[in-house]
Length: 394
Ligand SMILES: [Zn+2]
Image 1 (cartoon, protein in one colour):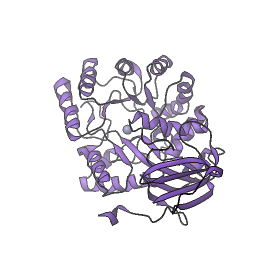
Image 2 (cartoon, rainbow, N blue to C red):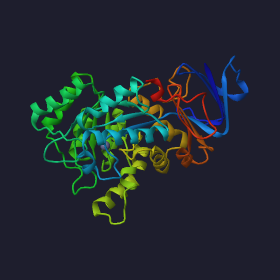
Image 3 (cartoon, helix red, strand yellow):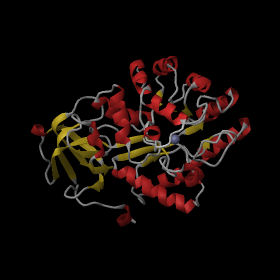
Image 4 (cartoon, protein in one colour):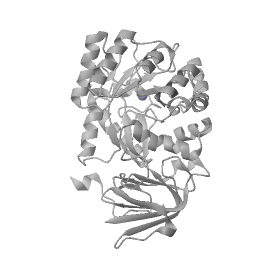
């Protein structure tokens, strides 16, 4: 069956401006046509949905999240719970992500390979959540505990074991902690030694896995940049010279500002205030230096709208900022059959109420989410044929 969605505006995720009165058609989970409504020939037997007050966009991609925590809550307590409790909340939060428009997500470290198990279940059609890219074990040392994963490793042998365990479990990425968290006294202190960092890259590269580094700056950032790390996460305290080098080498920065700026600030520590000040300013430096930015929520589930807003505040145009979250994100995740509304791509489509070109905050008003051509979320009165839930497919 072919479905046609006509909408007041269409932003295709390549960075170009919106098409006024656009349409998209899809069949069997793939986009078959995109254009202006005046050129539309409705295919025989197609279902037509008309959304004149909506903007169509590619499915959102959250390039940095976790499934076992919500970072506006108490992370340590969340991770300390029983596995079943963690899993129940993971499903709830992932559903929230999907309903907010996120059809694909990169998950950067969770306990017990939960990300890899959930990803399998999604691919088998058992659960409706974003498609996942996984990192398995977080590679982190024992003496600087940041985090969401329970396992730690020290020294080259243990690091090799940790990386190999993730690879064996089926991870897509290798993720490691190169510096402490942003809200600590010294967020640019290197956690691993230079030699240990070399081992992480050696193991990941030999297995053909891209590397993601939690990194706020300092010498650890220099080492990651020298290794052509695939993405630097957060990067709040990167220096300008480091951004210049990242741009030159094509290294992606994954800003996650909501986890800092949306925290309860009623009784802030000086470290939170310092991080918030940077979170409000560092993106304009990244934009000036031409660093490719692909945003993530860092498990502030459902708030990609906030991250795109911060890119716009940092100097990106609205279509450029949306491309950061969609087309550019798909390239970072090596999933180039999604991320843009173009013929042949996966039918991952979001409709938001209003004209996003006039007001980027419209991204929080999602009324329809289509993933792989299947409706996953639709508010009252808006539907792409019959909603097929995972439950009915079992
Ligand atoms: Zn994270």
